[in-house]
Image 1 (cartoon, helix red, strand yellow):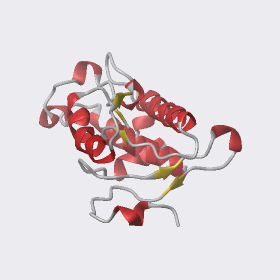
Image 2 (cartoon, helix red, strand yellow; image 1 turned 60 degrees about the vertical axis):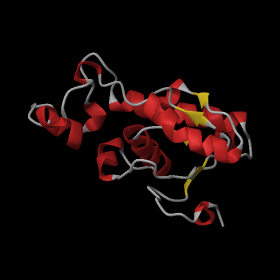
Image 3 (cartoon, rainbow, N blue to C red; image 1 turned 45 degrees about the horizontal axis):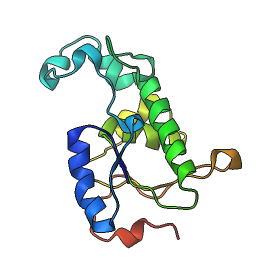
Image 4 (cartoon, one colour; image 1 turned 120 degrees about the horizontal axis):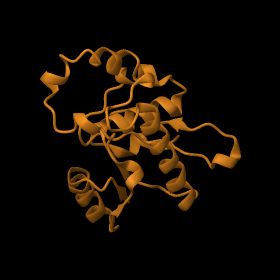
Length: 159
């Protein structure tokens, strides 16, 4: 059971940890994108910026002023997911993160270019289960579901 260090993800992880008898471990690789100078700005004002079109249509070429690029964020979360899977081979890992990093990971897992990741929807408290093979296996990851908000978690297991 791992969570981004930010409070909102730790709060999401807490009831999952309690229900499973696990403790939540902090994993910096699951952090939200570093929005740099844009951190804390209202979305309505950011949408008026000329860079907003690039954020939406060509995120792979955008770096937040004083922050990280979407490519850096994608690489960071993917590396973290591979690291966590490697720590628990054959096990189940719960990783609580944020919408943009999860969308970037889904894009990576499905082979979709990062410029299309804004088309993926990740709702708060949704579940996006992936099967992460060992990186040395050469096998591709498998996306079992995206943005699942249903109650029946048994449908999220590989068949």
